[in-house]
Image 1 (cartoon, rainbow, N blue to C red):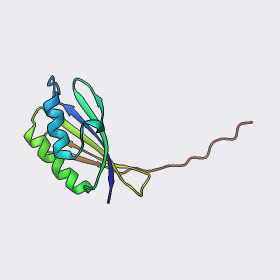
Image 2: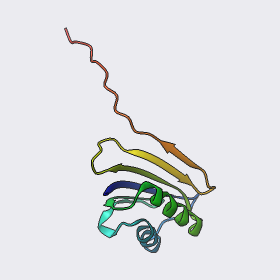
Image 3: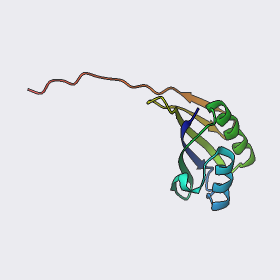
Length: 113
């Protein structure tokens, strides 16, 4: 099943990202050059879809963090093709992973008089 991902890789301290690192992250996580949305000195954002489950993505993100100590964290938002609300996890350099559940909340607007 296709899963849509938005991934942000944030560099550690004053480490700057570079083209080779972008390629390594993309190769490991499943995105290509055209999927990269933003490149800044200290972070990279990519938007893409792939048939890789969030569990597989967690494992791949952990491997990237283990192999590249210059990355501080990787923030991953994801949603299945048939869903509208994304979930999210953030994996940190120290092994910590935080999970987040997306929700839609409807609040009644006050009538304008």
